Length: 125
Length: 371
Image 1 (cartoon, rainbow over the protein chains, first blue to last red):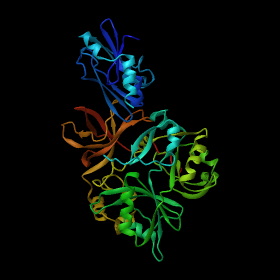
Image 2 (cartoon, rainbow over the protein chains, first blue to last red):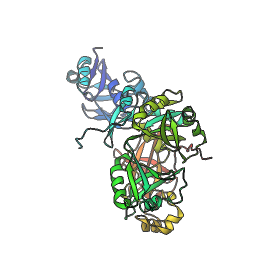
Image 3 (cartoon, helix red, strand yellow):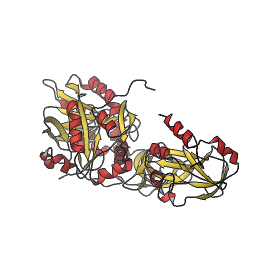
Image 4 (tube, rainbow over the protein chains, first blue to last red):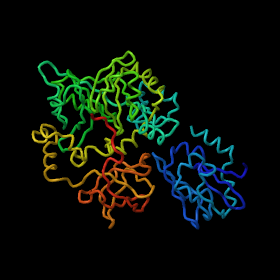
């Protein structure tokens, strides 16, 4: 999936027509364990690349989600706070967090593609 | 940071084989969860039976020296009634210090001609040193380091263990026994740290893996790790040493005065007895309470607790998620005036005051077999 990019903080972003859908990766959900809480940003929130934008908590730990790119939050996964386990069971699909209107598409080139992200994860062990 | 290699329990290889995520805990490499996840393990314990490896905990045998009395000696350092503890029974106890602070919490079993103690892993070295300094002239203190400890917990634990030890059906809550299980002499107590019925089995190291495999092969039993152990005990309202109780908390503040028998309150004879007596008579400035956050956001250890005016009331000492409650839960200390059930609280999470209230403990009813 050439449109899927990854950050070093284990977020994924799927870009379509200038809007990126963002979530956390299968690797991240596995590291976190059972997710029990998510806090989503408000629609309209201005996000800055690398800055905290959402929260995900598991039984044992709290974790921040950072905006992969600068832009504006245009939609959030409203059902997710009531079903946080979706982050574990479907991290790339139903476990998506928010959609962001990308301000600067150039920022995407600083993110990893699938191959690079896989290598990055392997290097973490 | 400790650069020493992590210690392993006799079940270490089994945990790894089962795909456990291993983490350092009290100097040991321990399973925090297995592939099924903490929530699944927790729920399975409450519905059926989970097997925990708690071999990292300390097991100590106290045998009276000739002409001496082990119970009398132990009473010099613990808050509980040991002289009145019948053979075949166990009891919760606290090691205290002069200030009234708690050094550790432990279980004491009377097996007739000696006492068996189970202490927390993080405290076991200090506890042993403490005992040696205080009562070595009266008792032989043996560190049972070559024994593993397995905790089988849940409503189906009896059904599972009965296949190997049918006498377990006759053991009541806080009872103790020596049985031969799978050819090994084991010390078994009907007790645990989950709020459910269950057994703790002390077995020689070399036989631990075999017994664990036999139990895990039973339809009722699944492995459970330290993550589930923590969420289970939190739901059960049980304090964790180093979090809810420590040298800065007294038994009365911690709501553990129930474990100090009337005779011990009156007679004293343990460190901090005067403090306990005074606090029972006059009250304490703060109390350990159950805390229920509204919503789904958990509030973790060390979260500040405030009143509606932003005044500090106390702090969370154990906070997380309760899978059986299906929501966040916590325990902490608040000033006594704000400790009534229903009292509204503000929990300072990420700079905002999360609404919560004081609730009674436990969060989940205990399932002990007291008959």
